[in-house]
Length: 226
Image 1 (tube, rainbow, N blue to C red):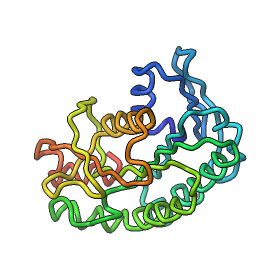
Image 2 (image 1 turned 45 degrees about the vertical axis):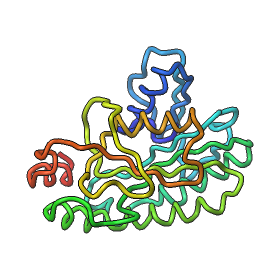
Image 3 (image 1 turned 45 degrees about the horizontal axis):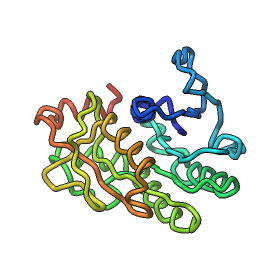
Image 4 (image 1 turned 120 degrees about the horizontal axis):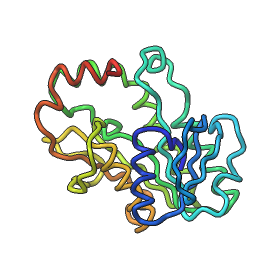
């Protein structure tokens, strides 16, 4: 699992361990405190610079939860984690004959017309370059003919406990939904690794959440990194 220390990565690890899977958690920095769990191995690696072959070797599936933060300077010039980073993961997998890959994209690659106006204006503007990079990542995945990839397209991500009552459909989330919990996304990604469903497809995942989660204050707080 790449990007293991992020919100979705942590949720996916929990989901994997609930299903008794062994996890190799790969991240740019090792955690200061690791879980007391012999089934989780923490590995330090940079997806943009390091040879990733040893980190995917022997894996049944690879989950990429890499992502960028909300800092304005990062969003103005996001590092190529989704493009170059995902390509590096794919190349390592092909070299090691590992086939199953699940990555995170966004429903906004397909449509920007989701959510209230006070969400769409700031979020779509600030995250435009990230969504464009995700779009390029999805295009690049098509070139890796030997991989059984799935690019999951969540809505606007949020915290909250696992529900498992999320909606999944082709390509874009329903028009009346906007939010996706990190915990539900992590759970869905692990289920894809187990089932082999949605291969070479872009399933969209979201959940009906309370109205206050898309209020102007919630939008401002989250976009500003609160």
